[in-house]
Amino acid sequence: MNKITKKSFYSFLALYLISSFIFLSLAAYWFFNSQVAMEKSNNFYKMNNIADMVSADIIHAHMKHEKLKLKKFDYATVALVTKKHRLLYGWLLQDVDYTQEFYMRAGIFTLITKRAAGHLGIEYIIVQSGKCIDNIQKIKNKIAYAVIITAFLIILIAIFLSYIFLKPLKDKMNEIEEFVKDTTHELNTPITALMMSTSRLKNKKSYDEKILQNISISTKQLYDIYASLSYLSFDNKSEKSSFVAFHHTVKEDLSYFRELLEKKQITIHEKLEECYITIAPTKAKMLINNLLSNAIKYSKPNSTIYVTTTKNTLIVEDEGIGIGTEKLDKIFSRFVRANSYAGGFGVGLNIVESILKEYNFKINIQSKENVGTKIIITF
Image (cartoon, rainbow, N blue to C red):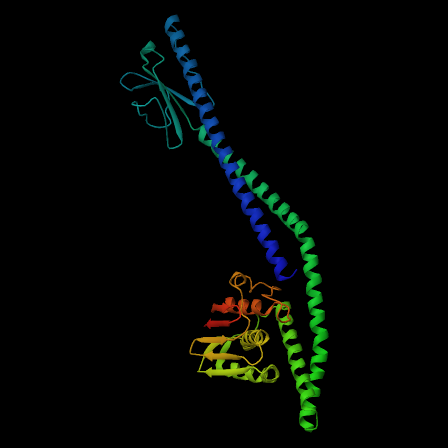
């Protein structure tokens, strides 16, 4: 799985999981609250029912002049208290606040009622229970287990769906990647042969200089294509950055393009002040090569290209065909060309942008059709 497919896979997976977990959390929260409300309501009715049964027993014992037998309840404890708050029967789980009729404190629900109506000297029937909190905790545990199991199933489903949905993209990207790798491999052999032949001809000093110039230019153009395709195809982030004398690199690249400039009768006006930056050397060359290559490609014969370096900038300005305002936002997209004036794959500025983003450099492009283009890179 290549970088683009991985990025798509993880993006889809993250989006699916985040949305699913948000929905799951909301559903679990709503269900838990509804169950808690139901449990509390059920608890209230149970405690009221116990109070009713006890009050009925008290009144019955009083009317029949019988001794009261206080029943025991599994769900709650019952205490029978006099008007002066003296305990007559039963027991209390905690102290009672007689100013309230129903409340919860420290996990214990307390119901206070006067349904005994003073029979047998009993003023208050007090019902206390901690079962409701225990039941709520059980509900919470059950929901938590259900959420964990559901989340696990959602993750499995998300991975499965991500794989199914992205499989066509993965297959297509693999085909493209293999094509680019095969192309770069095939280009490397003739490029190497051409460069060696040119070198031998130069050493012999016996050749048709115009033909040799054409061979040299073609070789360099092929090499630029090879370098661009290699950069796009392979992960170049592994190359370590170093402290580079950028103005020297620019000087070397200007020499590299000298023959092409002479053939197109383009004049270079260079003003190279010292410029030191931290960048991978190969990427420094790729940055300059693509900017100069574009400037030469879109410049008309007998025009001038201005190349300037300062302490923290690179400026490349040409007198070429320029770029329309409506196209400036699209020129960094891969395989997009601003016009059909010259050939190319439309990858040069895409490579430039990726290098700038990696090192947090800034770019400013000023262009006007039929006047020229000025590119300012700020390091």
